[in-house]
Length: 379
Image 1: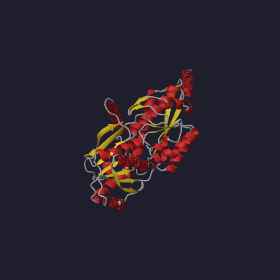
Image 2: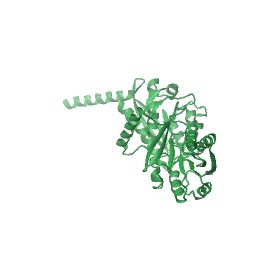
Image 3: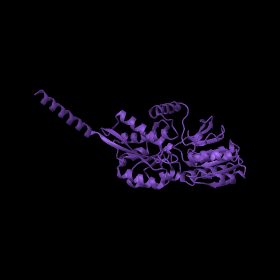
Image 4: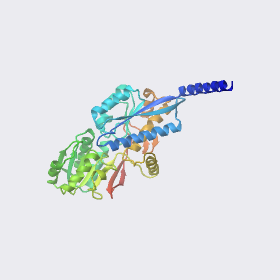
């Protein structure tokens, strides 16, 4: 009799648990980055930032519209390729995600943004800096870092005014990101009274730069700027040393990673490289960033490369908009997201009418002893 009673109690408990879980809501957050290929270390860094946020949201027991939300991360690899980027974007739309964090590269973010816009799904990029991303008029597109106008412009002025560059060579990898940041850099150099002595092009898969570097060496440049990613910049720096080019080497956030010294195989001289990361904190905010990096290291046994804190904040600001709107339906929380003010690890996040972050910071770095060293935070 007791056995029968226990069985009834157990069944009732299961029914109660089932009823409770039926009241919960599942919130699907898509994340896209290049987790394969030459810059997989950056894509994985981004994905870990998203996973850290999702795990924290679930640990907190966030409630949206009176229902406990269970956040799920749907992570996709676009390999930094625009075609693969649009394919996985459509896959996430078909999976009925509530929002997307990504993509990493401008070249994949821009074409994917139309797919998300057509589906009415919010997209926050933590790292795409090409201005075109937020110039298409899509009400679904946001970013939490400054764009190339600020990034390339600041580097161009720094090259002339601080590094005293009189003869400057520019190389880009012909991607949306690389070409965009190189163009803004060149504009700022000229506006600051500098001269672009040589312009060369490569691609994001190249490994041999002998021909373009030989042409650059003939101009005896003070500064070489590269618009592209660290996987190409590292070997380029190594080959510059082999050819006896002693110029300063500059680049945007794509080269500004912890992996760059390894990719350059020990050929970087102290303070030779100056790069900029689209973002940055100072003062009291620095303690929060330091804690994030320590927690990240403890959780994943890996150091932050570049963008993980921005991915984390992008995920958190999206979830915060859902909570404030009382709904995970993009049609309902998008208007809230567009007007939000959120204090994150990377600073205060609020968007302008285009979806760009307001007052986006920029951090200049160099490398000494194989480690990144902050020069300044610029707004």
